[in-house]
Length: 276
Image (cartoon, rainbow, N blue to C red; front, side, top):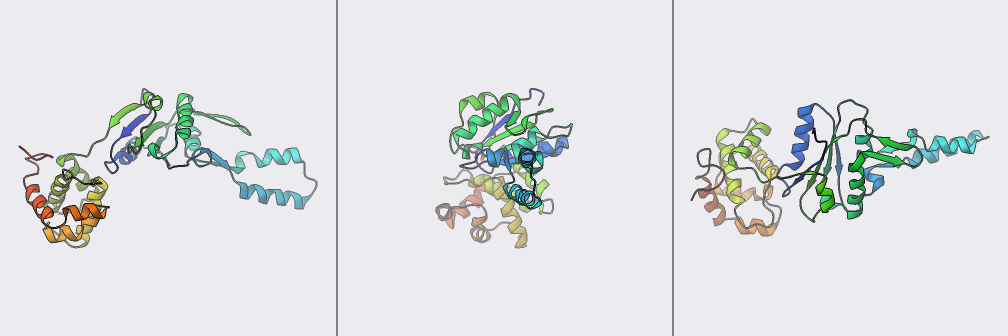
């Protein structure tokens, strides 16, 4: 934070990159502003746009009143009263003394054109709106950028950032996460779920379950009043962990039984990966 450089978090989907930004904002007691990236994202969705509906309504009211000063009307229509601030402008124009955390989530889903605009923004933390002038950040936001590596983000952007690879958590860390997030879960069940998920991640799958799937699965087991794992309930709830039918077919039945048996060798004493 003292370096005032963005933190670039890269890793597989579901490992907890977005949660890092939320935890940082909570820890600092500041606002979290999130920009969810997607293909086709442009300035209107990311920075600002004009409230055209309100502008049209204002024009009609002016026309009904008569004797409209067109120059004054135009200045009013393109004032802040009709400006919709999107996440990037919100982060730059934040009035609070404590800077917000700006989360630019899944940048790899956006286009290279948007990457270029973001590169300019991160250089000086200012945005120019032709009708209103330049907005400059009095206190630059704490920027966190995430990527799931669906495509490579340009090196020029990465060079402006501090890079960190976020991997799947080991047994101890994942157990700690789920006991904090779902404190009512029986300890034995939480340990079994964590160990089984750790084992499953070593299986050849199209999409490995992340921490979010671990939490969803444990919540589903609690809803089913399960107090411990058995092969039948795992088979019945595979859809909470795996999102592709081919992956479900790969592990259902005998592979589940084998993984459950191997997972018993995991735990607090054995660590996150199977020994020897």
